[in-house]
Image (cartoon, rainbow, N blue to C red; front, top):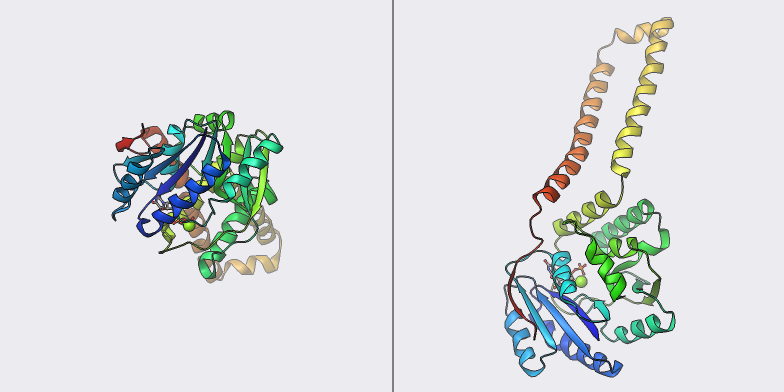
Length: 306
Ligand code: UDP
Ligand code: MG
């Protein structure tokens, strides 16, 4: 069986086309399938619309979360319920064309891959948003040392049972699934594709969501922020030692001490550096605290599965 998992948050105008195209593709593949749609606390009529579709085809399964938990949590809820030998993760805004599932499946079979990642040849996000995406993916690629790989993958992917089980074994609450998917290893394949523009409406991930996703990804996959603090600290110590020696042993150095202005600037500078670094440490403490609270990632209000 193939399971298609889609998170939905206020996508009412897109749902008809989304389901039509997904059903057509899955039927063409000719294997038994299920479509698991997770309604992530939509405030429009998305849920009702999904349930209407379900009346016509019970292979459409709906999980209703108790409120909006964010799309990584929604994906997780869907992935947990997947019963297929193969599971597809796909956004619900038609930026990833459902028709590509067929190619993914073929690639999976022909290369005996465990995971096939959609590999974006180009990004459609433009302007400031596009710039932020670019920087995030650059940084993330550097810290995970996966240069070409991580830079161009998102959620769109297919996993077999073994790799999905591995993915689901990772219980952390702050999660960046595309990163975790590479992290589990297994035999990874990549399917080149062009990312479409979102069919309708504005992106549901507001800027602050993206910032959160980006910090989650960077902080949970690397010690880079800590290293930066540590090595900048070391560098500072060395520089001050050199300046200190210079002041003690050289006459022109002694004169420097008489002027208090550079010292004030230095003082403020170091104070600010420390504040910024306490912020970084705080982020780790906060993340540790969040994980230790061990709250469920989401609550399910209703599920329509059989
Ligand atoms: N989504 C969700 N919960 C949210 C935000 C988004 O389930 O809180 C869904 C959304 O309906 C879409 C997918 O996640 O199907 C990707 O969202 P979006 O297009 O806003 O993300 P982007 O393309 O900016 O990564
Ligand atoms: Mg989108």
